[in-house]
View (tube, rainbow, N blue to C red):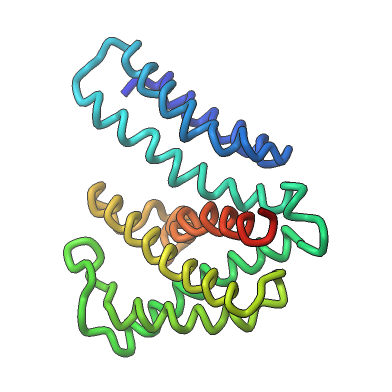
Length: 222
């Protein structure tokens, strides 16, 4: 894989977060999924190397979506004007999202350890069980309900959002488990001794941040 293409991918990170910092909602939404989805494959074509090019075309845009696009919505929550007006606090919503996402990880682990017998994805993540998943979703929904003071949501909206975060968090953790299994590693790095790397700690946020932002936007703004 040509290093110049990788450099362009890395360059997307500050650009995406600049768009989030400025609150450029539409540009943030289309920069990676629309423009980079076309530009990166074309840059790979320009290298003149076609061996495994389809693999690179898949890996790079997907990595940007999981590692940059989704997480950047955390910054957009704080800086998007409409999320910080009329009694809505982007910082409080950010705290709610992070707390509920991490609580879901903990609850699914605890329920799985205590009662887990029936595996969901034995070939991808053997520790994930139906008992852990269901117990985690229920517990996270309850926690989210009582953390509702951080949001402008009514009780039914809180239940829907909290349960959605739990399910989406499970999806994100499962996706990253599959990626690590493909790479043949247990953790993405050893940056945090005993807990893997930074990406291992935020894998669930990669799939909860953007849906949370847009669901909140739809519920309280549109």
